[in-house]
Each structure stands twice: as structure tokens, then as C-alpha cells.
Length: 427
Image (cartoon, rainbow, N blue to C red; front, side, top):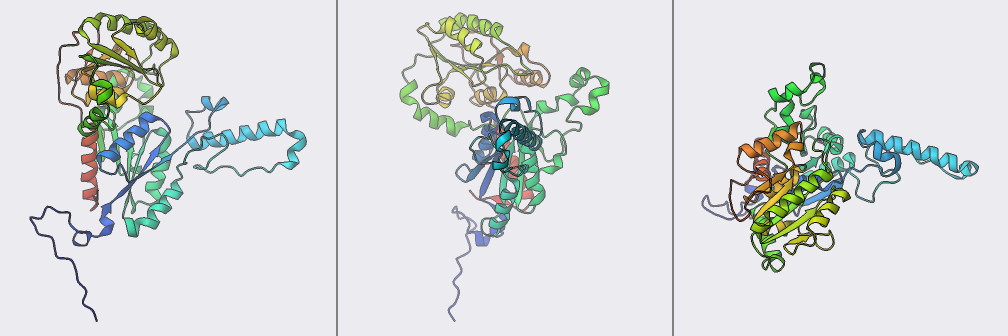
């Protein structure tokens, strides 16, 4: 009988990685991740940012929870995804019956879609199916170890919680953004501090007493809730350095200081229109003398009437370049090469990314925000991270602050939670 040759035990002072056989076994290592998205870039960026910070950027699969599109569906976005799909199915059946009365016998009725099934009219993307992901986690557990599941957004809650319920021994489920109720459905919840604004004295004053029991969250965060200042994202020192090299030829010749202006769009809790656009244009014209150059970008949510005013007032100025959305995405190049930023107050994500650079960030339109978003801006201002944009600034004046590091801090909490369970990341 041939003797079995085992590898030598690692030296306590060795710097090389320890073979799995000398650690706690294959089942303790988390090597891969599944991201549950909702089709919105801002939400999916948070999940992918966390996965990237955990070192699993090249070892994750993206699934999406999708909704029917077009027609009446645009008015049904507030419904739970499963109910929305069933209503869409019924509407399509009724429409089909009324239009094809004489041919009804030639058509076969499709079965009612399941909660995570694909119904007619959905985008051609990989649909998030909780049972499929659960089977994947179970079938690969012996060989690959536990599966990290990261989800973000209201539409992903049902899928992520189902995965946790059906495969709790094989997965670690992280839900980003507050799920409003039953937080124990997840192994970890990561959410901004301002989501707990309803529990503050200021928040309580704004809620009529008879409605307080209906407003969530109702309880303070417990030990498995991780609080952040802003949104998670993919911007850190490493990505900024890489982007600086990638976009060197595009930005190295740009006159300094470079002011980057990021314009979002009105939301339910931060309403504005052409009035803010005119105010922003006037303020930008006022600071042009202290700028070497200005670059302006719009988001997908920017109303055309807002962008038209900015283009009309600033488009012909030689110092100003307005991105038209054509060609490569310059966002990371702007973050890397800008000397300072102006960001509209509606976007927590854009502000969080800018504030992760440590460069001056001016915010426009804070006075138009209400409820918890006003609390978000108040906290950033008190920390010295942002300043209001008034048009009287000297852009050549530089000031700094400790960059926001929400994504890295959240990743550290995930490491600690996995360790408490006896698991660790194998990058």
C-alpha cells in the first residue's frame, strides 16, 4: 500500500496562503456571490459595490427581479412584484380575448406565471428565481461552500428572503436598503442612518399620532443592522487611481481647476423643475471666473426641460463642456480628475460617490428636500463633508475632509458576521 503524502503544515510566520486542508474545511469558505438586482443602476451599483469591496467582483452572478412594462403597468409599480405580474397576465388575457374572439379556439392559454416566472412583455434579462438559486446553492455547497447573496431595493425583498428561508444553512443573505419590516428574514441589513429618521424626535413631530404605528421602521436597529451615512457604490481609492490612468489622455489637458456638475432629477421627496435649473445656471455663471473648466453631466432622470435650460444658458461658453450622453461613460473619469463637484440634492448615490473622493462637494437644492432626505443633507453638512452651492464660491479654493467609506465599512461588517458564523471569505 502506497503511503499518503500530506502537505507540510504551514509555518506560523509564513506569508503565503494557508491550504484549505489546514483550515476549517471547504464548507467554511465563501468563494462566490449572487447579486439580486431590480434593473435600476443606482440599486444594482450598491450591491456590486459591496461584492467588489469583498473581493468577489469576478466571482458573482447577476439576477434581476423584473416587472412588466408599458401601458397600465407604469401605474402598478407600487404593487408587490408577484401581484403585479398576475394582474398583467389577466389584462393581457382580457385584451387577447376581446381582439381574437373568432380565433379563441385556436389559442392555448399559457399557465399563470409563478412569483418569479417570466411573463409576456418583460425585458429579456436573466430573471431572479428563488427556487433556482436555492437549488444552485444546495447542489454546489459540498464543492464550493456557502453562497453569498446580496440584494438591494424593494422589489428584491421577496426573492432574497425566500432564499434565506429555504437555504439558511447554505447561504448568507445581505439586504441593502431597509426592508421596512421583519428584518430577521435576512442575515444582515445594510441601510442609511436617515432611514431611521421616523424614530427621531424631529421625525415624530412630522407624523400625525394616528399614523405613527403605520410608519416604518418602528424599532431601533438591532445588532444585524449596519448603518451607513449614504449609499454604497464602487468608488474607492483603487478605482479612482485606475480611472485616473484610464482617462489620462481625455483629462490631463483640461484647464484647472476642473468643476464637475452632476444633475439628477426631481423625486417625491426632493421636488424641483425649471426654477432650480435657472438658479443653478445663474450660480454656475457666477463661479466661472474661478474655474479653469466646467463639465456638466445629466442623469437618466433629468427632465428635458431642466437640461434644455442648462444647455441654453451655458452651452456656448468656451469654459463649459456639456456631456450629451453619447460615447463612453465619463463618470469615473470625472470622479478621478475633478477638483471639486456640484451635485443636485436629489441623488443620495451621486453625492455619496463624490464624497468618497475627499474633494470639495457643493450641493444644490437642499432646501427643496424634505423628510429623511433633509436629515441626510443635515448630517453631511455637520460633518463638514458638503457645503451649499450659492454661486459665491471660489472654486480655486480647496478644502478637504475624511472621505466617506461606507462600502468598505459595510464590507468589514460582513467579514465579521461571517466569522461569527464560522465562515470566511476566500478571495
